[in-house]
Image (cartoon, rainbow, N blue to C red; front, side):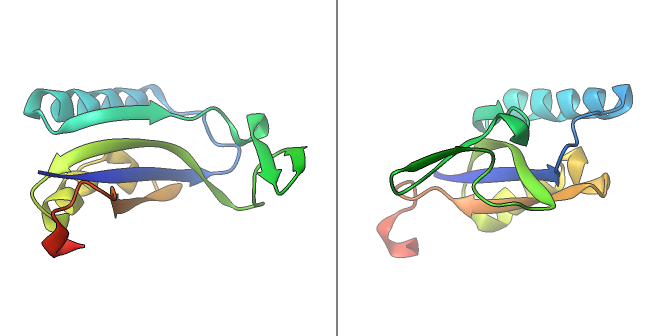
Length: 115
């Protein structure tokens, strides 16, 4: 089965989730675990903790200055992109209006005929 990364975007500086949003996110994670499709999941620390490397230069701060930043990601196993998109649509963050979700195939997890 192929793997898909589901990237969670949020507005820069966001991180103050209501208790209801935290509970909804936890329920969604538990659903993915119970269904057996979740391979891994990671929340990222705030953009203020980022360090960027460009050539030989190392600087504090994000690689790009953006309104929305990657807040976390998780990897799911799904038979195809349509199934991965259905899993992504269930994420409660889709309804919050603060960012969005991006789905990308994980290179090397797809059969050669679908690359």
